[in-house]
Amino acid sequence: MRELFTETSQYRNWYYSKEKLQEIREKNHASAVERVKQRVSEEAELQKQISAKSTPTRGEQPERVNSPRINPSEIEYLKMEDELALCNYYQTQIPLVDSKFPEEIQKNKFTDKVKASAITYVKRFYLRNTMMDYHPRDIIITCLFLAAKTEFSFVAIEDFIKFLPTKATKEVIFDLELIVARSLRYEFTVHHPYLSAYGLFLDMQTVLKDAKKIQVIYEKSKEFIHKSLFTDTMFLYQPSQIALATVRLAAKELNFDLNSYFRTKFNSEPKTKLDNLYKTIDEIEKIIKEYEPTPLNKAKEIDARLHKCKNPEKNPNSAISRKRKLEREELEDADHHKKKRIEDEYQKSLEEVFK
Image (tube, rainbow, N blue to C red):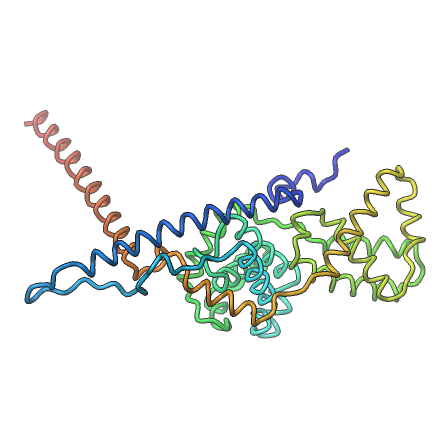
């Protein structure tokens, strides 16, 4: 019988080997840099063309571009490691954003599950996108707003933006919400280790007698689960495996021996399967224990470089954005004229029939 987790979209589309995860990130980053380079070159060329235009005659307005002058040769693009580090820093800001809201919203709306989903959405989003297109400052608040919806803890947009530490508008959040949803393939359900850890908490009470100690272990394990959210464990391991690792970590830290519980639960399993399980738990424990958040000074340094290599196509005041807007308007005008011509021809044919 197959495990239930293997029937989920999370397993099918967001569960990888370490090698596959690295490959996805490398391909996404390489294609993103190449695409942004092309847009930067196009922006620089358009700026040159605008600057080279003759001085407008009396009564004409000069064409202006309200975006920084670009020299493609001077731009240093972010490395994949830079994006991962900055992504990690901004993920850790999600609980801090939550802390700016009234206590009632924090307690009843922004639950552990909501914050975990938001962090997971951010991770998944940047598997298919780049910070040179979408700054993580805007993505984390969009993901938190979206996660509150998908986890049935909806917060009205007016209340949401009221308490945000940034000056985000509802228009920005709504626009990005659709972009994030598409990047997630509209797969909003996230299977967290929290539920598995709670199941272990209940199960341990049927084997072990120290109920108070078990409660303390369970509470401590949730701290390790929270820490694991900022690592790659959600891409690499099943939620039940992460939960088991965090419970064992918590028990070790509290000097509590869980061997009797493991013997009772797993001794009937084949030795090979059991060895693989312990190996997996050891790997997860190592990742969690070795995790270090991106320091603020490093995040600021990467953020400063990101500001210089952003995709100009995402800046509504850039020359390339204005060109794209004009191209869209021309297509819309052409489509409108085509429809009008067809309608006129149809009306003329009716007049010929009924005259």
